[in-house]
Length: 158
Image 1: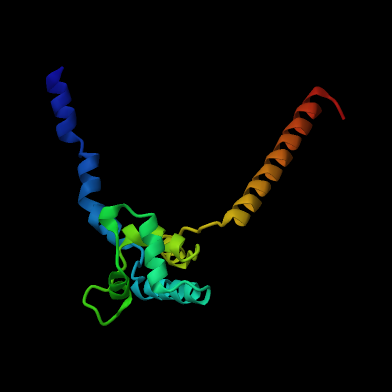
Image 2 (image 1 turned 120 degrees about the vertical axis):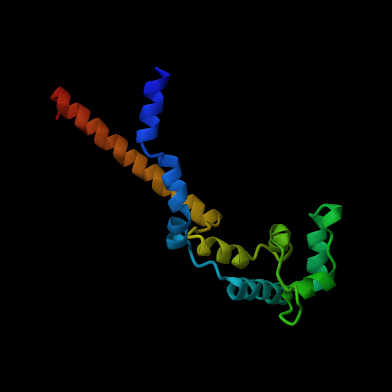
């Protein structure tokens, strides 16, 4: 029995190996363009400007962020300024702070929208989510009604 199994496997190409051999080509051909640095930083700066119009200074935003961050992640205004300054060598906004930043700026989700859109995803706010649930509920009712009509027709009810 072992001999048959060995001859079978030696004749057949290894499907998983073939997939692994072609994976880099497949991934490269299907990789999305995720160069979103300019858009993302624009959204961060937009959130800061909008928050400022609402009376939230950068100092206040940092204070609010620190309210919901663990102590080891506390930030300073200087760090926030450095993340947003193009002149700084390390001016990238760390993702670990994004949810606190969005909350601290009053729920301005434009940075998160940039990230999700780059991946082909869409965010729904509470109103949009309720509308989607309503639509799904209406669709379910229509489908149930159609099923009921079909069954009644099979029984000969008009």
